Length: 433
Image (cartoon, helix red, strand yellow):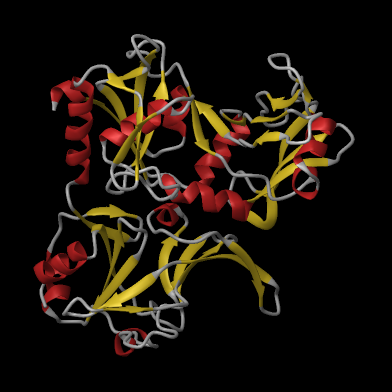
């Protein structure tokens, strides 16, 4: 087995990204494998299920656990499920470890990872386009381990080196093609490669995704070869900093909103719609520590240390009324799960729209490519007021028998603030590639 053979195996598994870690002596099943220390952006690299807070030990230390669909592969490309594999965030440090990767697996590389402290072992983790993680570990002195130790050209993300196909150039050339098409009819792509017209406020995104071959299937993983595609409308294509961008849309998992019905929530904190009869609305920009004029609610945070980035597993973001009651809340486990899914690598593309001769979109040649974020950057922008809660929630036909609810709990920011939530932001003119 050499590096080229292993790359072919990962390619057969539809892995566009492979992350490499040269294992330290304490990287084993007993101590777990250290995936991040201090900067926890590694959480954005690997697909996982939602985080769960777990408290263990005499000191009652709590950590965040997120399981992942993980398989070990052998030299022939056979794969073996490790059903208990998970990533664990220890918030008090903070650090992230990979755990449970041997337990319950029929053919795991136990000789190299079970209490093994040998220097020279190398771990490879490939991420597939269908949100699976595939692992391989090489022995000290093996051909692959020697190849890795000699190469000096790897991109690095935290503790990992990156072995990757050139997905960035592939994305840029596709976006250039779409830009050069000019006006494109509004559409969306469904399973079976069925193209349908799109009607509504989200069609700028679905039209771009259809051009890229992205199917509307409701999955949360990044859209295009590991890149999250985020389109946003502008009045003029050169005004790249003039729009609002929706970052994520997690539903509250606590407070009055969660405990009661949506209708009860709207009757208590919403207002009669000014645009349509027999409707209750809950909208408006809610910023940290500011009383919102229409709802009289204040956006706050509990259990987060701004300076160190440490967070309490029982903490979160809250909407509080003037009597101190929690109208709605989002736990850190909920927010972490949403934030990590789509922000490892993101491309922001401005667009114009026009209604005639039919609904159409045109996409800018000036785009942003953004990498390197973690949840601490989200929280810092939240405290500064750059990230805010901007709901679009209502119920129509409130006096009728069949009510029509719409839930959209969205955290948003101005496009000019994108630079605050990523460590690396590259502005690219597609006409120059």
